[in-house]
Image 1 (cartoon, rainbow, N blue to C red):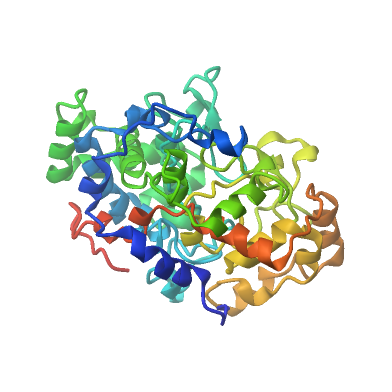
Image 2 (image 1 turned 180 degrees about the vertical axis):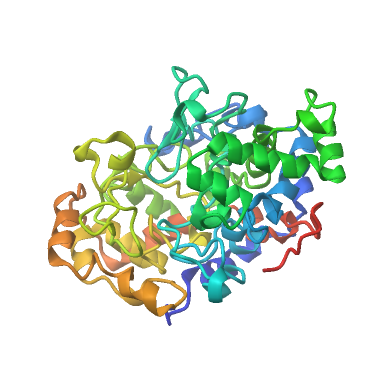
Length: 471
């Protein structure tokens, strides 16, 4: 069901275009990062609540990953060769035409057709078996070192005590040699039946996934890459430890994909960034007042702290549960969030605090994309229980199919399950006037990097496999 109301992001684009200027291509845009701020005292007048300006040092490779690795990663990111049935890519759910997401509440992965909000659920035997149970998170700034956990439940995180260097769902089967946690994240979408692998025994990748043999799955993907002469040449150029096709592993591919994401989708030139670097005119008076509310009485910074407006922690904030769920609860349609990773019931319904950089561009919002209006998402945070009680189901952007729709709102239709989510809520209501809410929204819009408003040039015209770019 599509929300009949227009998206706020349209208004955001219009109001920011005046400051965006011309948008260079992805390589030019990211090979010239902003100068490092040597003086962090610019925010002193606003008190110690403000974070320090973001600098190159906050990113892997000091914000300058190897361009050969980045270009290889760009091609891999958009190439459907990495999916079991050669019909989806990383970009299917994280496209540069849809602000590194897909514009849907819940992704339509393997078996769907189309891109973004026009994507359908497929047809016949190729139709999807289920929606992907969580919203496709945006990728902006995930190349920053402080993002040491990935996924809404944090099930992948840096852990030097583990053989691979990461605590992860694959356990001891997880390989060594991954550059960072962003690269490690790229190891997993290809293993998911709903996202990229395919179902049952319909291809050699889905067969390995069904058997739970992830090393075999990653090896079979590497075999595909070794058989492509263009990719072999690109891998040899990008990695000093690759001399022949047989040296290529899927770990190399994941490292390249991570390098591309980190380089292309760095976003730290927003009006707020410029303000922190000393430009007092970068934000409007209303946005500055909204900033004071954000870091003060509105309480936003209690969770949305740090340079990227996230404490990297997990919180239960009474978010509506829609979609098929993650297999939790009596009927399997609930999603217990962080508890799935820790096994601790105290973590039930807690999800990772999202970064707010470019948040105006990345709807729908929430771990299941329950809110298709950014203002409504903010209003939810100000009074979570009341928002849950009046939740407008038309905000859910879900391509319709009758059998899927029957379970989309199963949790919300059960008063006892809703009561469980409400009971876990951590947030007390905050009262703001309408004028203050407008000021707060102005500050949230000021977290948008103008260079991120047109990232079409991140999309290659073709990929080495020769597979079609369009769905």
